[in-house]
Length: 287
Image (tube, rainbow, N blue to C red; front, top):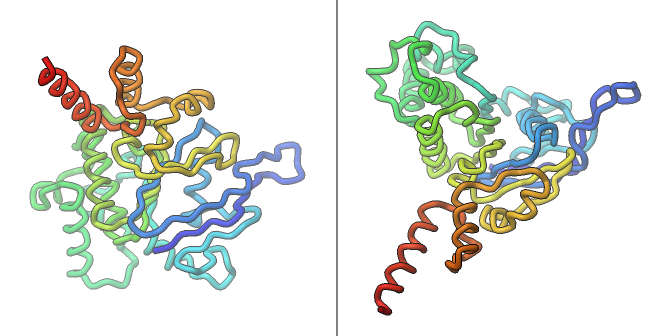
């Protein structure tokens, strides 16, 4: 899988009093197996970016290549893109409407040219991949599930198409800590299985736990594309553009202010706990 965006811009209502810039000259690429997070203030162009990648919006200028093909070319078959790229919208549980979990996950395969057995295999595999026991969940009403469970069912509906790339738009918004942790574990599992993920989120903690690379948008422009460790190490820049620092990094900065030397590259809780434990151990040995 290879995704490449070249000089993407999008302006709504061009040459009218309502002209609005949504994205400005954005370029980046993504390859198979990457986990990329997208950060930025509301209105910076994050969700628009996902819609353009999914082929739901057409840029005013620039090109989007997926596996070497221009997805906005006249001759390009968008149905092919749908089989490669899945998108989970914000609050996806609101889109669950079938009478059973099984029917909801299978809905996207309704018009696909698969045998009944193949559709069943895909639905079963998708539900098990997001952590459900198939026989226990398949006949339940989606409305009877918790918020986190509904979100996992929505993800399973995308997974049933067996995409190469999944786009997530604010996937942890509204979830309680348990639901958020379930989601984080699910997407890490998907990524480990080789699925490329691009995730838009305001939740710095979720991003820190999942992503290895971060794109930062400000005022419709891509202003930073760097490894997550480098982005979170520069907490001052994040704060200057109105973005939150994740809790683990905030803790590390607080410990440094209190005199404990913590490596700036550490930004995940398990890493910081390990570093602190090691320093305490070493301090004890020296006494």
